[in-house]
Amino acid sequence: MPLIETEEAARRLARAIASDLSLYNEEKIIRGIETDTLFDELSEEIEEGRALYKSRVSPSLYQRNLYDRAIVDILVRSKAHVKSLMW
Image 1 (cartoon, rainbow, N blue to C red):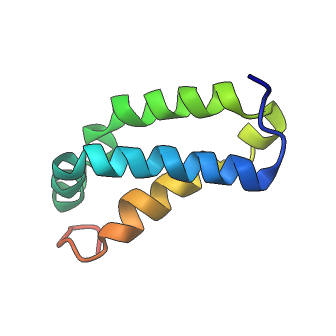
Image 2 (image 1 turned 90 degrees about the horizontal axis):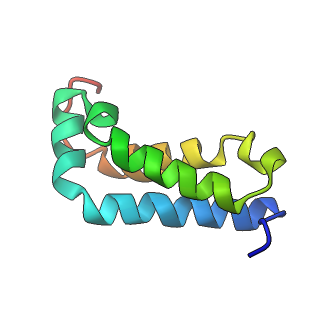
């Protein structure tokens, strides 16, 4: 499979991976936000997603942190309603 070369496609892939993480790890995400341990709770899942993302996009796009932005947008911002020590 050829590497993704466009920012739009890379952004879509990053958001799809982050959405899957959100869908399949709802309890961990809520617990992580409530206790300010989100990235510890999901470290394995986030790194697995990162490896998949890195294997699918060109190195220049990987360096743009689109995956990390998607993680914040989907796992953190979408859960702003959850009580947390962070906000």
